[in-house]
Image (cartoon, rainbow, N blue to C red):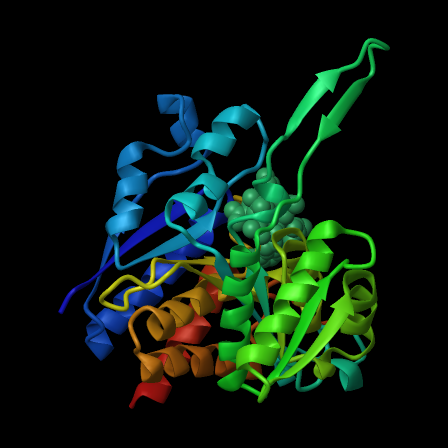
Length: 367
Ligand SMILES: NC(=O)C1=CN([C@@H]2O[C@H](COP(=O)(O)OP(=O)(O)OC[C@H]3O[C@@H](n4cnc5c(N)ncnc54)[C@H](O)[C@@H]3O)[C@@H](O)[C@H]2O)C=CC1
Ligand SMILES: CC(C)CC(=O)C(=O)O
Ligand SMILES: [Mg+2]
């Protein structure tokens, strides 16, 4: 059986970290028989300069028909006009593939407790998943526009929209995920102020009562959550929230692990009749123009995204665990890219150097 994966490096460090993800996939093919065929898809600023659009129809079709997509990151100088980006950018790809569920696991590695922004005793043992609604909310709501008022001043409008179906769909995934973990869901919204927050809380409460009373449910207002995740992140298991809050709160949670370069993600759609879910795997971070081209980006988020692909799209649990263990062993062995706090005297490794350290551990662990 061949597994067809479309790999879209994108811009900036997306290109650099996807090269490392590719090396891991090639190692798995050679040593573990994973039979993953990588086809490259184009997206981003360079494509836009050449063709007038950042992503072609062919790329969208290839993404929809692939067994999974591995995605780097896009963006940087923000020169692509917003309407073109909206129609043919990453959000459009997520929409076209029907990706509504974005899993963002956050783990505090023992070896990185000196890199976390929190005290070691607060971060130690953190293992949570932010489940972000990905296909709706304020990133997609209409109307959205900027107008010039008679005063000559501008006024901009974005709209937060959620339907009951959209909330119930992501909440069901959260409860099902919690059943495979520690059985706890925290639902995060702003129901004291926002209509969508009120609806979110009502729908999550009703679904819990009807089908998931075995799972412990807490409602946490998003401002309080932003404090609680820093105060005591170990209290959380599965955190389900909307598109905007999930984007913000998962980036913040990255510093529990020690760097945004540590967080992988899986974006999933609805299963078809054969049980196959549309899926895209990408690091949580962006194209990082401030470090692009220097060969210093941390490739771990991208490599752990490969592990998520092995698990969620291909059911290759042992291979996923092998990659995760190799990452952990490389960190235990002292490999650190520059974003991970490097103590005096220790020389940081490059992007390729971190992958090399991980591949050495793969070799050692696979025997
Ligand atoms: N999924 C995607 O394609 C995303 C794209 N973006 C886009 O990326 C561009 C840059 O956005 P920023 O706000 O700077 O966010 P960013 O996530 O690219 O970078 C934020 C900070 O984290 C650091 N960082 C991120 N990933 C790292 C890694 N793997 N190793 C070491 N350091 C890392 C960067 O150097 C930077 O200081 C923008 O155009 C934005 O729209 C942002 C987030 C996600
Ligand atoms: C295009 C942005 C919404 C990307 C982003 O920040 C993310 O998905 O984390
Ligand atoms: Mg983000």
